[in-house]
Length: 555
Ligand code: KIV
Ligand code: ZN
Image 1: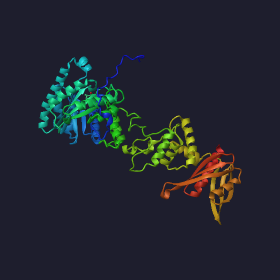
Image 2: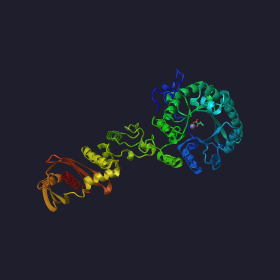
Image 3: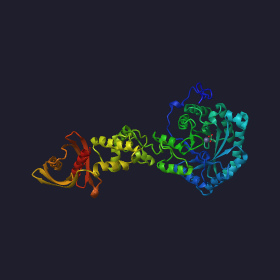
């Protein structure tokens, strides 16, 4: 990098718009969406999609709900031409969907595009030429007047050649893009858009689409919004115009630029799924659409099976959706931090169905996108006790008492630390079972347990193996637990008091079992939990005591 002061780059000049309105507005409705995945997105792929992949992708876009789909540049190659023909001839385009084709301002290319479009019900003919001073001077060596003439001549040819399509029943719409609009002087962008509109002669019923691209993103989103508001307020036939946005993402603010420009008056948005496109990509339509949704505005696009959308996208483009991609990324509904897990668990527990969504750290219900709750918490050494308890309860049905959360949380965190990676829900379950329920190498084993009641007292008989010998024990108490604790007190095993007991059923119906959690405190001051499972609730608690005792002996 150049050392300061930086003279190599210039700040983007602000727009003179003292009375700008957009900062005081809010978004109230979704824009018209146009997918350019099959053109702008496809052009940017190292390995462009095959025709079969494009067909699959087109079907996906239709399923998601796009009503305007740019399908390519049919005059640019035979593959693009054939793809357009297949869509039309195989009747793959629903009646309410318009296909859009891109074309330069050359008569032969315009004629060829119209040949590709023959028989289509609804089309948008998208014409463009470059308008920025850098393009005019360095690439085309053309004056402003020359560039206006290119655009108006092109528009006249489109009008002429699409007339045949219209006569044959095609509903024709027209889009014009002053390419590199955001780097073009605003007065010149207006001049060329007005000139094109003069030629096309739009109506209120069939508006012209003026697409104002940020072909390369150079400025902050507020400057983009100013540019759009300036155009929106200076166009003479605003009632006959749809202002369309087409942001790229060179500064990483394409989404913000689009959202602010919608406040500034734009009607329509072009972009791609997950932001595929040249360099840093086009606008990510999924994020913008779902941003609307989380403000209580239906975007008119359906991402209720977002994993499927992602799968098709990844298969066809051979690109991967990054794990942190908003809404669709693998990790976006996963909390690793313990305090976050705890907040999620608590706020989710009080989230009422039908009430406004208010789960902390999770801005959208994953179920709305077809994603599962279970994936939300994964455990690593940074996770807290709440997260572990959440996994054991939600995935395996164990409702651990609150006091036990800390104990099991530490145990799991130590294992995650030792492993150096996160633990899956199954691994957490296995550790819990091994530590509390199975205790394969435990020194104390319960062989047999039976109680009898006499008057209001309970008498127990137990057979237990410890120190390699089977011991027959008896004890009396006001319940089975008290009787068993008394029986154990008469042995050489550590003495303890029971501090806390809880139980619940696991599963339901004939298969239901009871699970007990018992906290003990040994005479040496050690406090720990044991857990036991059995179809017999009494036996579940006796097993929990043996589990706690074995854990005390292990320490
Ligand atoms: O980014 C761009 O300017 C384009 C135009 C062709 C609309 O893709
Ligand atoms: Zn583009």
